[in-house]
Structures are given as structure tokens and as C-alpha cells.
Length: 388
Image (tube, rainbow, N blue to C red; front, side):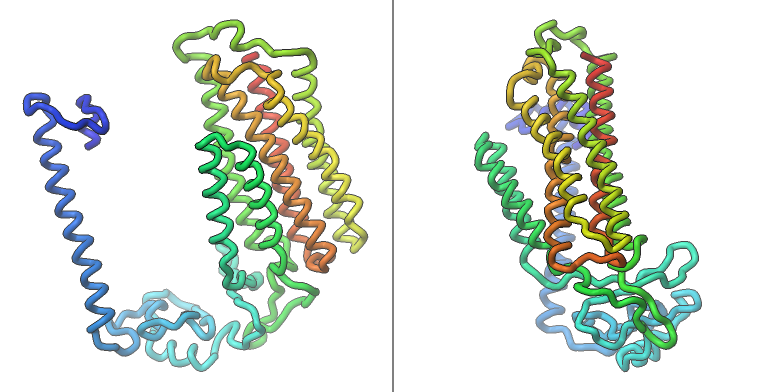
């Protein structure tokens, strides 16, 4: 199908002549599609027949020597009753003997504490660092996904007030979902097996949530990079350049100053968030610092959305470059608004006793988000100054 596209075949074509040069490739695609469908059908049929008529079998029916076959067949909901200590190559194990010992609770995290736990080890040294407390089973992510789907549909059908309302509902759901995560009090290092004591993840800085936020922001940066590439492409090498003067004109005085002030406010919020972490480390009251972080962020969000909604920016329909710059402005405004959601969650969780001098992950994640937003805002302002 890729080759037929290169040969000029359009999408959703209802018919074509045999002399167009596409017939042989389309026939090959059709035959391959039928073969692929038969392969999927056989797999589904095998799963159904094995599930309904296949006999139960013992542990490790294939006689393999790797860790995953140390579970029962079929595996239990929790997979392992205890986590093993592996000190040799993973393909030289005895799953039969190891499975019995793990089922009897000889390993790490065998004693129930009422949490869903897993070990976290350093990737390089393989040293146990802490243990993570996983979220409990809940339908809240499904509800959040449905609300997100509804908001996107509203945007597609230009129901913007309803989309904004659903976005606020979604933010409230995420704040609600954060409640109860982690620990309600300090525990310190706890026994995880034998003589090994490890802290839970809310009491360490180098935790899975921090790494998750790091990689989320790296993935998020791909969008800024794509928009920045679009601006530079449209500015330097795109056809139909230069755009008409009315496409690049700023409507009204003070627009550039408002954009600069908005970016400065985001940087101020990122800077004040460091004081929140410092106050938490000293076990001091954090409410005033959370409020002090929120104030410049509110100002930045208001200025950003005012610039987009008031018509002071050039019409995005006038030229693709203006549309891309408007997208950058909207990107920064949305991230500033999400920073406010982070701060609201910090305030609620702090009031509920879910944070302490030991448990400061919430404030660390908020600072990471705000620093990223400030960097994205500076890049966006620089790109706008380059082309306007």
C-alpha cells in the first residue's frame, strides 16, 4: 500500500483501471490481508478452545529455566506471593523449586501490609533502593478517559464552552485521584525480607513518580520541538513566503509586553515553588508558599488566554505561521493551567496530612512541571520574536 501511494494512488479511491499500474500491488495487499486475517483467526480460535476444553497443567509445562515459569499455571492474580532474590543468570534457574519457596512466602515483600508493593532497584548496580506502593484498583482512570474523550469531541464539534467545562471536571477528577495515593504518615525504612529494610517510595526523592514525570516531560517536549520546527520551516523555507503583512501584524499596543510579562510570571512561579520544597523539608507551613506560587501562575494563564481570545494576536487562519504561533501560545497557557491543578492538589494533600518533611514528592513533581513550563514559554517567546 505504501508503494501504491508512491505511484500516485489516492486514498479512498472507489475504482481504478488495470492500466494504472496499481493492480498487481493491490492484489498482493488483498492476498496478504486475507492471510493475516486467517492468522489472527487461528490464534483467537486456539485461545477459545484452550480456555474451554484444554486440560489444566502443572507449573512450568515447557521445562523452561527462567523466572516467569516459577508462577502457577494459570498464574494467580498477584503472580508471586513473594519476590525472589536472583543472584545468577535468569536462564539458569529452577522454576519448580523456586516457585514452591515463593508460594510459601520465602522472599521479599511476603508479609502483607495492606498495600500493593513492588521492589525498586537501581538499574546499574542492581541494588535495592526502596519499594513502591502501587495504586489500588479503581474505576477512576476509566472515568477520566471518558471525560477526556468527551472534551475532545466537544472541541471537534466546536462546542468550546462545554469542552472548557469538561476540562475543569477532568482537572477535578485528577485532583481527586491523587488523594489517598502514597502514605498518610511517616514510616521510615520497613522490613521487606530477611535483614533488608527499605523506605517506601513517598519517602525518597529518586522515586518512580519522579522518574515518570521526567520521561513524561521528555515526551511532552516532542510537541514543543515539532511546533518549533514548524515555525522555523515556515519562516525560512516554506512556499508562499513572505506572508501578507496583515497575517503578521499584532492587533493593538502592548501585546508583546503582555507576552513578556506572562513568561516572566511563569518563571516567578517556578522560582517560588523551590521555596515550597524548602519549607516542606523544614517541616514548616506550606500554604502561603503554595499560594505565592499560584498567584503569578494565575496571572500568566489569564494573560495567555486573553491574548488568544481577545483578537490581539493575528488571525491564525491568515497564514500557517500564525496558526503555529497561536498553537505555541495555547500550549503554554494550557501548561500554566495544569500547573494550577498541581498546586491545588498540593494544597489538598498537604491539608489532609499526605505530605511531610519525608514525603515531599508532590512538591517536587510540581516544581518539575513549572520549570518545564517556564522553559517552554521562553522558547515560544523566542520563536515569536524571531518571526514577528
